Length: 392
Image (cartoon, rainbow, N blue to C red; front, side, top):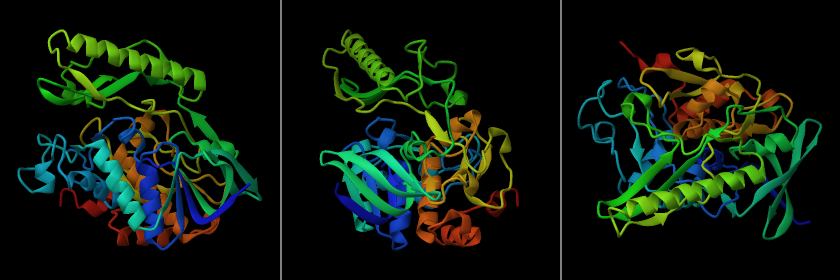
């Protein structure tokens, strides 16, 4: 079996994995990034969930910085697709609870290619078509990860491992404590189409529209079924139902627009929450505006204006595995908090922290949290709500 070697292995090329890989590589580490698709960005590209949700609290204060902002600006450097936040990016307009939040709709294909370019510039090795098959643990450390690809099975030896799979796959394979999302996922069937009104993103089913903005017009669920997302047969059926919903929508559109055609459909299931780590600390929705001494950045609530959450570093690891970090939607949070932490800005915040920590230590039990925080601050991250000077 062929073996590879790196300092930091990042498993999963969504927004969390991209952020982790960039952070570690920019600190001089040899980084390998695994992605099971042949495109970066995860749900935000292959899944067509192309809303970069807010970096602000909805009351005029930016709360997520660093790579979270850099990755928002990346695709719109070639033009935003929709909802361009001129009041944030160009300083045109005001930033109050009545104004546009710091969010944007971007083009998924532009983002994927630009992110790939940035990773290569940083020296990251990208292995497409690879997914984790096993994780060997010795003395509380992952000694190597076995991956499967067109090459067969290969072992990758890494000093630090970042699980950004979205499904906590590495954590589960390594025997770390995990939890699943008990309510299950609503069926979604987002796709792009082109017709007499131009190029449109159609958000069928589960939709990231804040309740305060949907004015009671949210569509009925496509099905009463919910999906856990961790069984092949179930996910296959979910995918089939998504395709059927898209086809039905196309037929209905053609009743009034005979030229309506689909231009792209998702090439991965549009699952939001499946499995996560049960870490050293579990963050809850009731902890808005709470100070955490080990905060690695802040996030807002995309669903409503006002809440600000500091994210404890202790939600990114478990004491059972000394060289495993989590990034993206599978960090340690309650079910109520999961719906907040699963979105793109939160994935970028946790990804940057995980990649930075992976570059600074080979044993999380000995990591100097102050060194981690100092490094994050040097790279543009604001750690605590009190540093925003709100109301002063």
